[in-house]
Length: 90
Image (cartoon, rainbow, N blue to C red):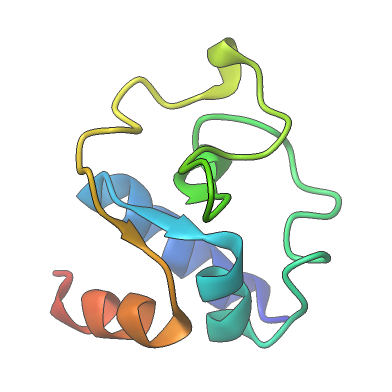
């Protein structure tokens, strides 16, 4: 996995106040969704990557969630949706 690509995606999601599923982000960085967040801190920056079913990051406490996590109702659910969104993001 490219750390630079992962950081670019996390930065864009935070700037755009946009959630994306573990699967969508994993697809974009070519890694298994199960390994995507391994070793990463549970914090507001990483909370934009969420579970498809709940729309929330798995295992996070309320203090670890970004306060604007639900700014947009939609969640980018596929790698293609994420890539398209990233292409439009300034």
